Structure formats: C-alpha cells, structure tokens
Image (cartoon, rainbow, N blue to C red; front, side, top):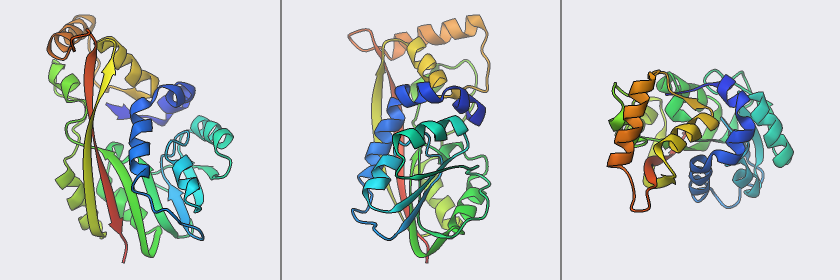
Length: 243
C-alpha cells in the first residue's frame, strides 16, 4: 500500500470529502498544539487540503503549508488562504529558511527513507524549535492485512521504532502518545473503495478470486451486529525538540 502524488492529484476532491480518518487524526493532533504561536514560523509537510493547517492558523503562527500534489494545494488555498501554500516534495525539500516549528499529519508512515527524511527536516528547524507529527503505526488496517492472501504491501512501524528513529536523527525530548480508533464501513468493499478515493492504492494486485475471498473473510471475521464492518487505525503523536 503506497502513497502516490499522482493518485492524490487525481483524487484531491474525493480526498477532501472522504478522508474521515485523516480528518480525525488532524483534530487529535491539534489538541497537542501550543495555544499561542504569534511571531513563530511553522512549516507543514503533506498538508493535503488543510485538515491540520486550519488548526495551525488558529495558533497565530505564520504557516507555510506544503504538499507535492498541486491539486491539493489549489483546494487548500481556496479553503484556508491565511496560510502560504506551496508545492513541495516532503522527502526531498528544497532549501528554505529555518522555522520554529515543523508539522505533519498522516504522512510520515509513507516515507521511503524515514531516518533520512527526519534528518533533513531537523536541519530546517531553528535551535530551540520543535516538531509535532501524527503517524499511523502498527495495528493500522490490521483486519484488512490479516485477510490478505499474501504478505501486506506495507508494514507499519511500532511506536518504539519511531522513537528510535527520531533519537537517531538527533532530536531530543522525544515524547509519544498513542490512540486507536475503529472506523465503521457498510461493507469490506466500501473500505477498499474508501482507500482508493483518498488516493491510497495497494501495490499488490489481487485477482478476482482472491479479492472475493478477501471480502468474504473480512465480512465473516470483522462484522458488527448491524452487518457493517470495522477497520482499526492506530495513531502515534510524536513531539520532539531541536537543541
């Protein structure tokens, strides 16, 4: 399962309407924000259409919201013009002036080289600054992965993995919080369609027979009394400082 900027470009409008898990994740991340960041500069990677951006604006910080998908940027700019919007590759960002805070939500779990990414981001933060990231971790989509007839296309890291990565990248005062949520879908097929609509595609292609068995097993193992099914998403908030 992977994140593709092309997918997100195509699915930007659907993402803004359908990404309920990501909206909830951003709302939870926002509860950890400092109340008053007047005079501070904040840079957000993977801003999407602004789920976390709207909360960053309310802190009073000067917010630079970035995303690789230009269609996301266009929607975000229309919704939250108070932020400065810019197209940017989070994994290989161009040079920019150091900032007081760096943020991301529902992004870092997709990093192809997370340690290198964290080191690059650390270099963008002023001494005495900090960062806050909401990351999907081990346990996310566990029901779906257990129903797959093959190894899952992604392995979500544990909170211990992320703590070690942040410390190895040179961050200090690394603090974490974890929360799991069950999201309800009318059927296993609606879950798969939801993942597609928010721009997330599986790298492992299943044939018709395999997909049919996956859907049947999911419905058998993870149905609620009302016939709907659930999917677990486990989020870790990482707060870290730069000395």
